[in-house]
Length: 547
Ligand code: IFG
Image (cartoon, rainbow, N blue to C red; front, side, top):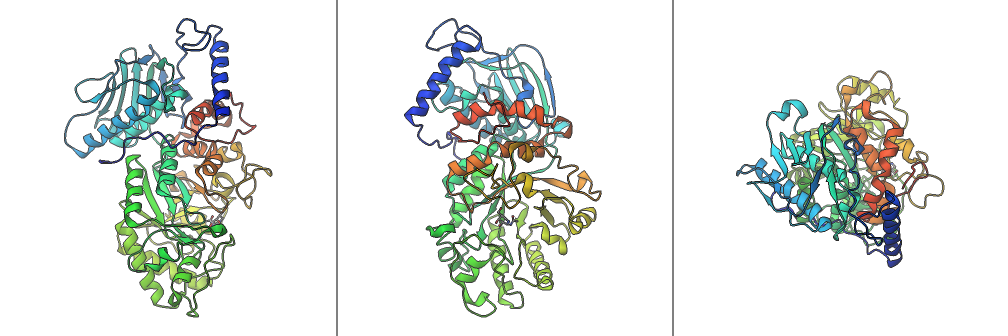
């Protein structure tokens, strides 16, 4: 966690004056209309009305347990943030979480909010006793007239508690300019922990390349919803996005274009390390994916010897799939896989390394099985656990994780593997694929898995989704993939990701008993002004009664 940037306000596109004008009008209208009397600081002036603080159970993901009660706490100019003392890595990471919180609050409140270990009304406290109660990602938040205490067994839990605190404050807390208060946190106690361990969002940086800054912006947005995993789809037919020293042409040539023929790009190892570190500073682990044996045109174009016929195909800038395959019979293929996996493993502090395995339509099935067996052994050799798209269940290695991307939950091979011990990450395409159009008129995205409106994306339960008697214990978690055939800017990512990424986060975090469309839809309403304050251009679904 050390050395990561203080939370910089999410990069916001310059607000058009028109939008700013509308925002001001709405503020004044809301100010005057809200409770009859004028809200503080509005044009109509009037006494300082303490707006009612957000209810403790208005948060997304829904917390596991909420006990409202007592007086709210008001963050004021006199408030300080207290963090643990000590030189341990955990204490340092906890202090980073305190600085992160200050980074969110200072611009919008205009308060100094000093961070220190001597005293403070808003306290982040490490407490080993909580490990039994809420694990290492959970936390306890208590709020009352004298302050707010976030306790957790580990820094990740404190960081998740900070995300909850953010959402308990008015949406304007997300602004990067000073806003009117009051900054009230409802009184009571939240005891919270995640249902699933693997709560992931994927970004496809291969079809269209996204810079380090663009990925950081998405990481910051995902952090608000307690995601703990970022799956980067680094390679595909259209581009190879990570420098591999032993095969330099992969990035230099294979990364030189993208869908539509643009300049593409790639991460140097240092840039990739920067992304991994930034994700870690938001308590997200990067799971890198090198897709194989299909989706490999960028590698085949870069090295003729990787092709069975010894001829390198041209770079590809279209959006077809299934036409490419590594040459399974050639030994050089396994030198390639070994070199790539070794260099990637060295860059991967996390446990998992994703080797794809999807849509190998140009690889004979027996060769696919043989290839994936050898590739999985190579990943294990470098100390990593395999993740693969669910086609890997044809022959999953011991401990390999299968990522389900079907649409029915009924594929027998997957069901059998899950019941035989292969953990599943669920990303059903007609629920979690964030590149699916919301409806026929959605200008971006694809529709091969159908149209996925906000309710369609939210209204399922990962614990009971798979058929054939697959138990909840076989489900490692949930992932929301963002494929980028049609997307190349943060604005486009945000339009497709929000609101649906918030729902996927809830399905990964909240207890089954807390799920339900009606309650979720009402909680979603309050996210709208928050996303506006964050400069997120979200989809205003007609299914949600936005303010
Ligand atoms: N399927 C392909 C992706 C991407 C996607 C777009 C998987 C596992 C369709 N494979 O999803 O490469 O093209 O929605």
